[in-house]
Length: 273
Length: 80
Image 1 (spheres, rainbow over the protein chains, first blue to last red):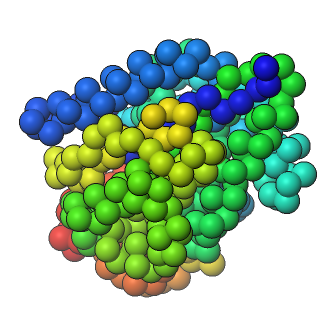
Image 2: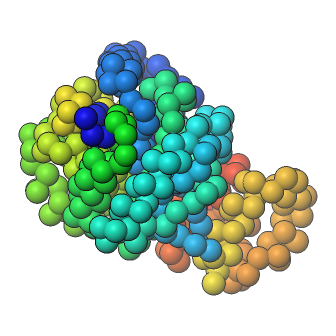
């Protein structure tokens, strides 16, 4: 048996998921049930490590050096705990990180690396909510908020390469890939608090039904206008989808959450469905 | 260069122990440590999100900066 990507999924990552977990039980209740189901799926997959594909909100990366992609290669990671978000120490899967770094560079991804990459809420909230603090992680930063962003097609290619690279890792490593971010929300903009439920449902429906090519055709300007700067984080979902090896997914839940100022999606993909 | 200075300011206020207190005690003195254009120096003093956004400050940084200074995220553009 070879190493392989065994499980793939994606979820929104807003801090309120932890800080204010049940503000509207008729909507937050189904979301919490979906995260519980996702956590159970991940436990059942008996993973050795989880690649967490997320972004950063100017906590770890700033204008002094802002990478497009950056892979954590450390033995452990600290959570920032910024603005009341979860903190703590997360174990790294450094050997897997190094194998992935070498493999991705070999496939043409000029990947930055970090031996000290504190994690903000885009990593920590899903890790805490899904009960993954004991599972070694490989954090993968994707620039989702500081133009120019990597194209959606480039993110798809990155996901495909992750799947190939993991398959070549020595041993029989069972690896998960979790994308985090989106869906519609506006951060630091006058439209903060808006949610575009129609856009969210279209995006999730396309991802579920193998319509990724339409998503890849969306210009960032259109995403920004219709779904906010926070929706540019769908890059992480595209990476996860491609890493699954299957152009389909299963939506576990979607709810517009005005109490959290965001539309929330929870989806498993490929082998995870 | 002012955008870099604003970004450094936001991070430092959030993470450098004592800096936020120093800012509240003497904001102009803290701002003088950063390379800011006069209009951006004044925009921070005025909590002027619209000017900072119009001049190109990343909205995530803008959010971090003004929230750490006490402006709720939902009120960023009402505060001036």
